[in-house]
Length: 211
Length: 234
Image (cartoon, rainbow over all chains, first blue to last red; front, side, top):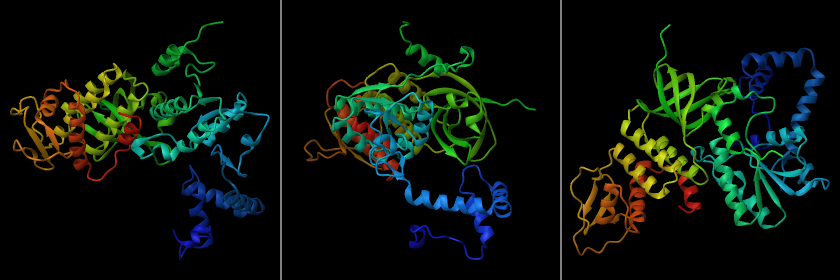
């Protein structure tokens, strides 16, 4: 990496004018190809220059301010994120999720009032992602510090999610921390006839006594 | 329109491909390892649940060349549930197949061995023998010179052998002083040949030999799932 890109300086190619540079860089966004980039660039340049300046400033600010929370690894603007600092939340409950998007989904649902640990990935040996890359050493430190009374595993219902859950189980049992896992089964409002075979099997294996 | 031929295959690995597609590495019954692109897979009903490892899938694909296009996915007819650390064993087998088998080369015997290994792991059989037998069959499929097929010449159970990569096994003279990882007893070799491990130590000896032979084939590539298995104490 060149020194200038480390400082976030523009990397305009030689022979490329400002418009071409904008069209190329807009394509870093997911789902944005040449045509969408062109539509966005023309909109910003012709109809909303003030909005565009604000967008540029917001991007600048976010890139310099947003980092990972020291405790939960979620995106944060302070050393400890808002959730980890919030004393009204049960800080002894910790839910392990794969991505910041999972935290957002759970927060949006408003059903959980503990804190999180964000893996920023999942165990995937075939992609070369091992325990070190998903913060298992940090999680183990937190378990060893005896600050967590219940660890809730909410990794995805995929094979890699399963492997990750198993790894966390080993850690939790080593430190004698209670471990639970979110239930898997029929979605609410879902018709059984449209639920896939694997989900039905999980729903049956994890059936609960009716009270 | 011609009807699409359907094939049985098991997913070894799935990786995101461009914006909304996935590159599937499959192990198919008839065509060996294949790379197939699943376009827009997240939006296709049933594809996300089915396109997972350790399930027998019935798939239709089209195209020719290195990468094919996935056209249809029938819901999985058989699924192997690998609980706990057995999922690491499954991932280990997948990683070996993914890294060592060449694409588009039929491997019917290896496919059968893979199915048997999955059956055994899902049924709760001890893991180590399953993995050693799997590794042996994979080495045989790769053409590694190990005289370990059932019909091969007799191995002297009282002798010791040295494995030399690229050459195979050499019988050592009775009093030779050699005790490194490449040396294995005839007794352990026989156990591996007949796939029956009886005495303690045979499995560990075979593991050392197979590891060495696999490392030669991997040619410097790391096996990440092996590290996971090691950490979990296999």
